[in-house]
Image (cartoon, rainbow, N blue to C red; front, side, top):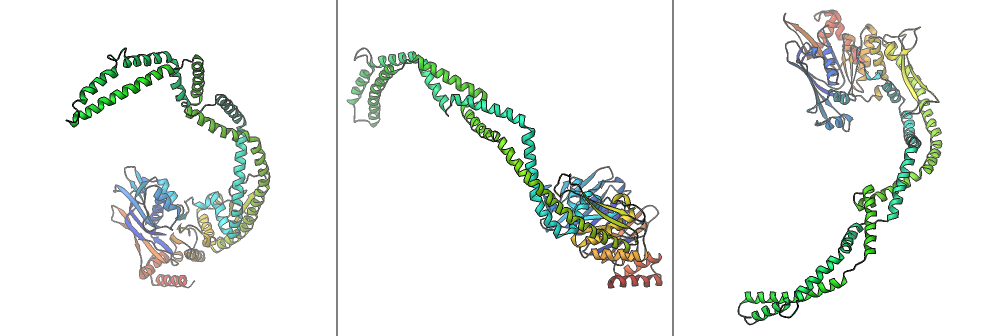
Length: 562
């Protein structure tokens, strides 16, 4: 529900604040006093194009701001929060700033947002009906949605049964199309995978073997130099005689140190290290001798290793870069090969499922058509009754539901729903946006809203001079119907008819002041006494007329008792 609307320097309005409440709110005033500025402000907050001519002459900018209550879980909350805005206490604050210099800025929940986001946020919060407003019921999708809302529970049940079957059918259709359309590409992919897997299988790589093979190949390729180096080192350590042998010298050093043992811990530690050197020399000498005699000279094994490493390197160039990557590619490709290799079986299974789904989808779509067709007749009759009460006795609305057996079922079935309208007897039915004038269209929208009132999902309805071109009893009926709508939604109406204004729960008056240089307007909420004066002014052009005041009170009494 819209709670607060603040205007500043918008058109002829210098500054105005409206505290909007639930129920039926009416806005009246003298002709040219800027009543439609309120509707203009709502349009800006709904993302309408910024007209810089709306900035009041002499002002740098115009500002519009509104506080709107939203239901927990509403899509508007997610839209604002996704844009970086905040929702506090289930109230969203929207704003629009128009600069005289040619810029405009939109704000939602304290965050600067694109103007298009305001349209997304407010689409579920307000519906505006006016002679120049291209409101939602002119759109084909909304006409179908309106009929579906009117159809109620039978349509909801039929749609709930239809939706999952249609979704599965579309999935099967898309999968089959992909399998058939891309058959050649999949066949080529199949050949590539098979060739690669055969090539890898012929080599049979093992994880980590490339490093082990490199080490072994290096040892075999340098076996002679390795054996020679080990033999020379062994000979140098062992020496040609005891006096020249390294171990003899270490033994002499150890003997010299042993004579001084026990007198200094530091020297004792050094003595231990010399003894360890002697032991290590014996061990290393023996190991070098063993290594030298054990080095293998195997040209055939070396050639085999080189061939193996070359084969692995070839796989790594194609499927690598590492051997682990080659093995991973093989695993992934084997899985993909299984998928591609089952195409024929998959196509056969999908075709069988498709054959079962097609008649079921069409059967459920036909049920949607039946429910909509029945509801369309009732909706047309009810709206015609409303139009007759709104001074359009010859007007007719036809809710047309058409479908074709050859039509491809969509998410909502196979039906095209269109509202057709004829304003007078003897005229043909035409599409809604072509068959009605501005005033007729406004009253038609009012009639539709009244019929759909208990099923409306929009919490606020705004009517801009919906009573244009009517008067007398028809005007009373317009007021009565707007009041009836207010039982289901917040209703805001701009009107010039006292018969309509009398039915409002809340009354704002736009007044104009001209000092000879600047014309300005203000918006004030009127109390009961002032309301009688305003209705008298609307009736007779003079609020102090006793006759007009009596008539005004009579209208208010009528509104309260009906």
